[in-house]
View 1 (cartoon, one colour):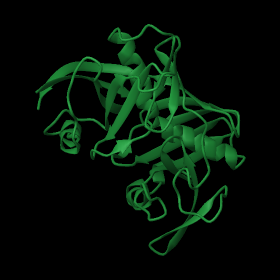
View 2 (cartoon, helix red, strand yellow):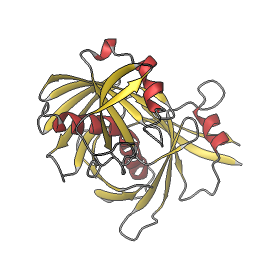
View 3 (cartoon, rainbow, N blue to C red):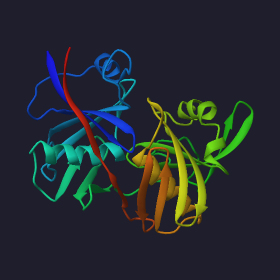
View 4 (tube, helix red, strand yellow):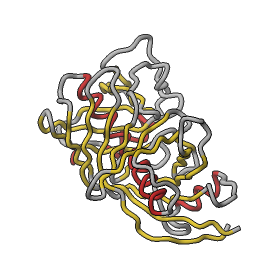
Length: 276
């Protein structure tokens, strides 16, 4: 079986994007891990499938697979690549596209200068929705790790996120704490882990250890979750520039009950085909 794909990235967060509208195939966890392998496969943080709509109010369906083969419910950088992919492949000429995922409906809008805006939906701080084990909802929660206590915010952007406030992202213990928090027992479906440094009310730096993929150069849903957490704590204003290792995103959130808007670029690297 030969599968045609497009290699893309959003601020260095890279993807294998596959047209599942015009190709028939089945992906397994083993195949996803092979695609993601940077030495023996194609190499990527995640695999994205563009599928026909499953809901009458949507135009397409979006599936996201992590490098370890597990399936995710949201991906902000991937959503922008999804938008560029369907435009380049002639699958849609709509200026605003409604896309269903396993957990939400997101809206993609085309802007000038290769910028794409994604309406990522309303963030949830409800522990049961995230999911996160807690007796009641709080702005921050104490988390015990190897005898040490850390304060985290817990939020869902269609996928779970833990956000830690740090003084300097360059010095943040991402490699040590990332995998421990990702698999902490209080996150029954594991979690993405964001390390957030507030520079000013309109500017932050962020590193993200992604569930099933490890640290990536950028994480769109992580940037949205981090800004929502910062706003919840009263540290950030409505529109924030988030500096990630791969580049910058602009995140806008008006507050409780409002959707989060993310703005940034998407790039095509090359086209290819792989035999399975």
